Length: 374
Image (cartoon, rainbow, N blue to C red; front, side):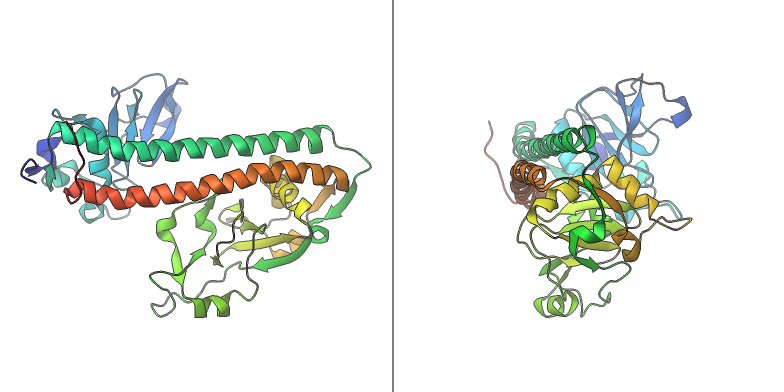
């Protein structure tokens, strides 16, 4: 650690509050507008040259983002105005590794003041070692990003095939039925959750998924998962989930889906349904249908609630769908299975890489683990 320098955050970088830009004043363009939780829109002008780094100043506190193109730094962020000779990508990971929550000065809305965080004491290595550390971490993030993009492409291919065969070339002779006719089992965890007591949750074990963890066909925010031990799992999950089950959020929001495409065990928590199709051929058809605009419309037609839209099991079973002939379902199922198996394999790799990155980040940023450079 002799090559590392003890200093304050303000010695290493200069943070600046972002600039006001109401949505009504955004002019259509290609410049990303960097908000406290990532890109919130696009504009015709930039405030900051790339590469640049922001952290959440208001609302979402301290979230760090790296931008590789010029951007508008919104007033909900603090952006690095001066890197003071340090590597920009290293600074991004340095900021990701700092817990800014203890510096919240807001009451109703979480808020950061740059003058309160500039004095944070840190240690930084030489520029050459900064570049080496950044290279290790960014290579992991690049691979994660590549796998995410591959999954989006595979999902788009399944959606395109679905739309061509089952929307554009729909046959009037196909049977109309309800979702209830296509489902063997609906596990309903709408509004239920294991008791939030220390004796119920475990530090490790089987993860409990709630509606907040499903978005865009993926499991998100794993840091918010609670865990249960084997004994509570048997008590809580009377019907065990299995590969091919479709998870559907029942409210807040309604209609987010996740396809279980592995044998990993999960516990279902609040605002979730698990749907089990009557046959394997129906799994991919139902998942792609319910994920489509048409499927979302069908779900919302059966929803109720003025403030929060939600759907009850009785209404979910009544959702009317068009059921193609068996041969076409088998053909689509075979093709879609290849796509979703690849998606599942990529998702497993993503989880592994994210865990590795999250373990390495604090060790590399503290100097506990060193990398070769020079």
